[in-house]
Amino acid sequence: MLGLLLIYFIGKRFYDLSIEYNQKKWLYAILSVVVYYAAAMMLGFLLGILDVLFDWGIDWDNSFGWNLLGIPAGLLAVWGFYIILETKWKKTIVVVKDEIQDIGKHSEDI
Image (tube, rainbow, N blue to C red; front, side, top):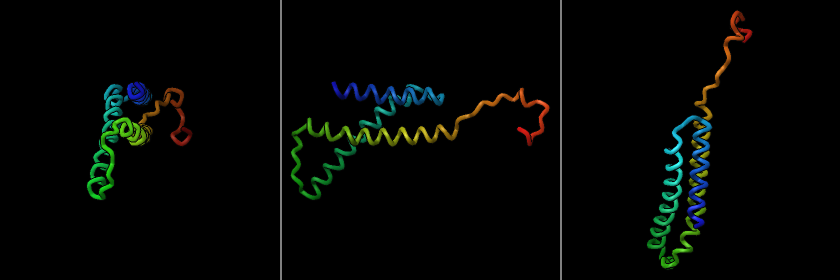
């Protein structure tokens, strides 16, 4: 149940961000959840490879512990994705300027 709430709030935050910058709402909401799961899965693969290479003897039957370990990895990846999108969209935002009030003024005065 905790995972569903976490996914809801991740998707909601990206949905709101895409509305704020006039982007595709559902695309980025779903993509954020995909990034969350992909990061958790990559952590699992990385730990599996390191376990084989260094023979750490990790208990792979403890699924609850692995789920708890995947949460920070997923949240960190989602946070990075959020920062990347926000800075990219801030650079491309178009500021609407009311030019009717500037009619008759010199271009240096504007």
